[in-house]
Structures are given as C-alpha cells and as structure tokens.
Image (cartoon, rainbow, N blue to C red):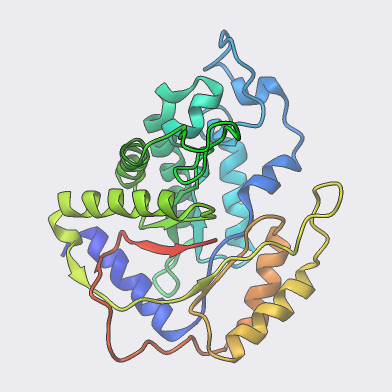
Length: 298
C-alpha cells in the first residue's frame, strides 16, 4: 500500500467517526497583515514590470514564512485539514499579473508548505492533512465580459481544463492529500475543473477506486459589511454550524472568507463529540482516492 493510500484511509477513518475540521480563510487573513508591494515581490520579482500586491498566491514563494504561520495558526486552533494558498494559482488568473510562468512553482511550494505544517503537528492518534485548493479563476466560460458582445468569451473550456490540470498536477507533486474545488461561480468552469481532475486521476493508476461521498460546509463569516469586512463572530458562526452538525447534515466543517483561527477553534469546540452525517447505503459511482475533489463550494 502506498503512502498516499495510507493517508486516504486515515482521512476516511477520521471522517467516519467524527466531524473533521477544515481551516479558515486564507485570503482575508493575508489581507489583515497589511503586506507591502515589496513583500509580494520578494527577491523573486524585484524587476517585474507589473504591480503584484494582492497576488496572494505569490507569497508561497516570496513570503513562505507568512503562509506557514497562517497554516500553523489554523492547526493550533483545531483544524484537521489546511488548504493551500492557491486560490488563484492558475495560468488564467496569474495572467492578470504577468506571472503565468510561476504557476507550477507556486502550486508545488504551497502544497509543500501545507503538508509540512500538517505533518509537524500530527500524531498517530490524530493525523492532519493538506488539501490542494483550486479556485474559480478570474475568467468565466459562461458569460461574456463584454456587454456589447454577448457571444464573446475571454477563456475557452479547453483553456480552463489545461490550466486546472497544470495546477492540480503541481499540487499533487507538492504532496497534498486531497483536492478541493472551491468558490465556484460558473458551473462551466467547475465542469472544466472536474474534467481536468478526472484526467489527472486517470494518469495515476492508484487513484481508481469507488468510494462514498461526504458533505462538507465551508461558509463565510456572514456577508461583508460596507467596508468589505466580516462582522460575524466566532460564536455566531459556531452556533450556526453546530445546528447543522446536530441535525446530521455534515461530515467536514471549516470556514471561508472572514473566518479566523478563532472561528475554527469555536466551531471545533461546538461540534466536539457530535456524530458525523451517515453515508447513504447506495454509493455513487465516482472515481475517488486519497486525492479527490472533496467538495465544490459555491
């Protein structure tokens, strides 16, 4: 049995006995740090001719200490799974900054940072995991960005498929235990991503097995206020998710935009001891493995 298959069994075992905790928001946590253009550039892009501040995915290369610190904080707060800093680490999104050439490197580095953080604190009794995040990209395949030309598309299905495949392959190479397709606003983009993941799974023979599916919830800390900030407290978020857990709706819980380590700690405490959702008797015929599209977050 390969190490990856062992990790898959460990995650399956954990999710079958308790509610597994995902981490919180990477993007809004980075925003709160107030990093400068120089922080984003590092020594890697000192002569780059485009501003890169706000390109969070670069930080896995230019400020790995910052990203590792965020992972550590969420793990300390009770997360079982930390997601990679790769929300926009595809050639489609990186084109906005002229950094397409770094896509594979930033995905691999992000996966290594998340994996190292998880391994550093796991125990035989409580393994921790790294999830490779695949975001929605900055382009949509279903809607024209030009109101004067409804038929125009800034990206094709094949562009998306190839971009997602490149990113996912690098995340696997970097050592993630599972893949997460997140924050989907275009179902055609999601279809391209799933198609790419199926291609990737087909290339790795060990990734062909049938498994049941589990349900995860990864909500924002409410809606942003007029300043783009999130006001929902850890206690409020935890109370809502505790209700979902108590009614048997979920197997994995975490947080997205606006959620902090304090949110994750509060959620973990609120659902401690609550049984996970029971899996239906009839499994879906999906090709899943230790590397699988765990969820799609809309």
